[in-house]
Image (tube, rainbow, N blue to C red):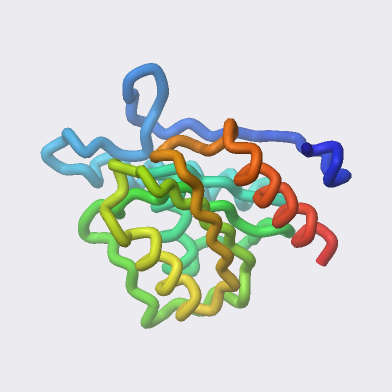
Length: 172
């Protein structure tokens, strides 16, 4: 499908500082202070975005929440050319909020992937983020898929729609 859209991709991944199962997280919900690693996580993401120019930034779960927060706080200075994909964002740790009072996003393109059976993110949370980002000046498209919290790579329709969005935004 990637080739059908005429896309090529180099992928860079970042690891959060908190060991979580077989992978990593950006903060721990089990810590007494969930924001314990948040500043380290923020610095990691901002440093990566400042060092290199990317076509696309993808965040999943906590990564999508962290990206949302950094966008709303105007902390990302080097926006990707294509836009942002936010897959099933989880709630932000306190004291971070979805405050748009000082946000001016200068119209970045955002694709939200929302799992209809997501049991990790609270009900309606994706809609809240979508509305908040739109109010802050982003162009937001949402694709709802029948899966849960995972990235829907095995859902051909969701994957096709996602790649079409990437290809269309890459042309603009």
